[in-house]
Length: 355
Image (cartoon, rainbow, N blue to C red; front, side, top):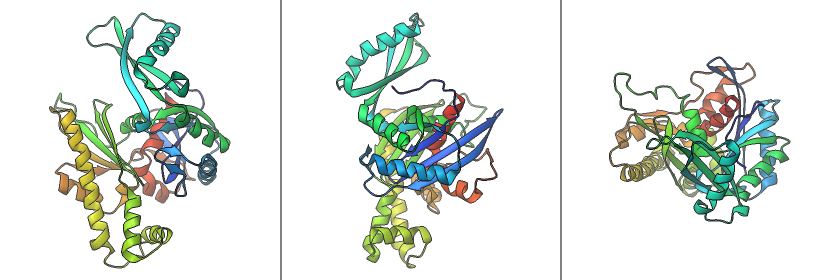
């Protein structure tokens, strides 16, 4: 089962993406959070293919490496499955049902909404609250995913010697971390809640989430990411893929790299974000985007925020969920700063410690 409820042990937030494992441990003192440990370990090409864990052992080894680099002592983890492999549906149930009755009824109703045999999926639910139109009914979020999407990720965590206490959904994790971002509140003199888009651009996938009223109201994934930039470098300068990635990281590419490769890539990224936003506009005709936040590894590309704001005409900032956090002495500030835009999912998962 997914676990969307309160958990006792402190949890490591572990984000398994197509290119890396990202790990985060947080503590809390009152309303202030503190980064206790952070670790990132790269994944070899082919370890994750089309959201599927193709090599659980390799991913488990990467988690072990991230744990070692972070220095954390925690053994319990929260992880997430990609939003694109999840079926989520809000259904209505009588508000008078007990917890046991509700669980039984949800499992009976699930067959209507899940297009797979129920023995092939993992299911969980969360009561959202009373239905707005009829207070005698409750809105219940039903979440389901094929068993292998959940169990392979749990197996990778267990390979690393950890226990998976929570399996969440990436879009919910981003929603959870959203509250930590600076300058996301609306105009205090206005009753209108802003709609804020978060474009999380990783190695192979761009995910656009729109947050309104503190909840994710739109999510779309597109096949675009930083791996494309590495491939452009590879083709342009006659390098192997590994050499291209290494040169990109070290900044040792020829002078024409910026004008002939990087700038066109930045424009392509802004165009991809615009395409995703158009899908949102078409599904929500009466609501526009008030602000854009860039997250993921590609958000760290120098000048990307300025490029996106110029092309899209929307105020744009770079995600930093650590902006108002204190930092443990063992955490290197340069590591935290460099990784901050790519840590939204891991941060949202680490926050599950405090449910």
